[in-house]
Image (spheres, rainbow, N blue to C red):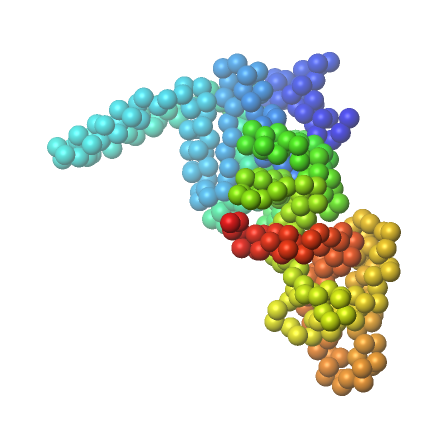
Length: 401
């Protein structure tokens, strides 16, 4: 059983005992669901847990609130109450009536009466919301690491403790691993130990995450290509829901474009180029030189990059023959670093030249590493030149005509 399956069973689907989120013994507890950035935690909660949980709670509120964009504790609390009210009561007739009365009263110059009525209405709704949240409801707070700097972590955890303990509901916090730094990191460590009762780590497999994203109805047209898309993603070992969505969107756009064909080779280059561009914001353009070899261009502002890359690329291709996986390019990077001074000496260049080569290399290590991986390990350009150029143009510009 995978991590995702175990987590889903433990939280909601266990048939041998009462699942965690449905067991009243866990009322008043706060749990934390963490994992790597982009691993699909939000998608997991909203698509795998929340719909089934809402059905099982039977009259209790199931609330989801993102902390992103919230500027104060009162705004967070208001959003929780509003979602609780909506989840059970549904359409807010009172607010609509208030709005209508407000329009009329403004015309008649009786704005204060409306303000008073609005306060009474809000107080009534807050009271009802607390009632709906009491004894077994579930509140999920997402995007914890994206909270406004105006919101103090101590105050936020204070609200969480109040809601969990006073209302006897269950709190779920979703966040990325290792998100806080400096003073906030220390506060976070101290406060979470006092507030959080149980920790879960979300770590789906590539297959699970891809299936959860690609099963969306909007990707039905890609059904016959999904196996090829997944195969290419696995070559990169990338585990990121947002990247998967962009990959699928690009493949779908290419499929639906006029006069475009889609096959396993095109799919592979589309997938790899999309992932590389998202992560490194670059495409690998090349031209064929007089000797018939490819000359790549990937850092326009440094002419030295050509000398460094051409020298090392011509020496090391045999290192990659028959090899694959995400570790080969690190050896390439190591050799690249150790050969820079050797290149300068062979060419009888000045000390200044050697210094500049090192500077260029050290300032662009990530790009060199990616270049080695995508060109030599994955052979991203293994397709007809005109199609490769067209895909690069599409990925770089975002426009496909």
